[in-house]
Length: 239
Image (spheres, rainbow, N blue to C red):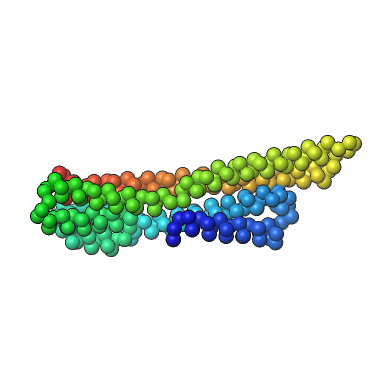
């Protein structure tokens, strides 16, 4: 599924669920936060969806078994010249790193049998195969991270907007001649506090989730660079 289609579906579904919850499920105390509560619920639902999606995707990217054990076994097979066994190990592991190395090894087998290529050209083709495979896989690991960061920022702004609107309503209630309108004053204060709390909660979760997944992706990137570099050095005879 294309990323734009996925985001559109998430936005529409989150808005529909938020409107339904606001109308039928939320307690009256929370509904006092006003229409901005719908926006806060919407971005919160989107955030939870992205967290679940990233968790599933990165867990799948790890493949079967430990990545450290896989890297050690893979490098040993390549060093011993057992390229078919190394490819089979990649097929069995099924992770992102395994897919990248498999692409490079298959390209290595192709250029090794091409007598028209010089040694330097073979080395360049092998290096390019690994780099191309890595550049195709990394965006998949980083997908939706920018959206999570954006939601964390927007949540704070929406909460602040709700706070300002609530305070405006409160001061308007106090501006009446004589005794202030107690109901309007309480409503304005409730609106301000509810939106502040909702915005802060969504922002905190968004920032924590974003930093967590960024660290996971950086760890993946380090493993990919370390393992592919070792394999390339062996294949090109520069170990």
